[in-house]
Length: 59
Image 1 (spheres, rainbow, N blue to C red):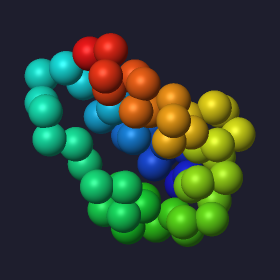
Image 2 (image 1 turned 90 degrees about the vertical axis):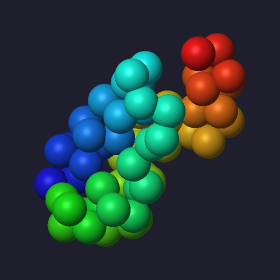
Image 3 (image 1 turned 45 degrees about the vertical axis):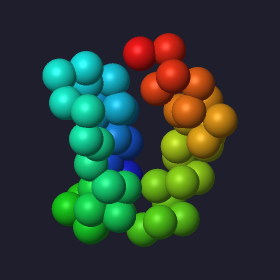
């Protein structure tokens, strides 16, 4: 279920039609994914907080 949570997170992050983003806690709850697994996977593929901030600024 972690993979589904990451896909939803990335899709929401890259969506340019909506300015309000889904809260990560809600994504994890929807997919029944632990915070540890979600953040470990997110960091492993390079979606660090610094990278996300830079990505959002470039929009």
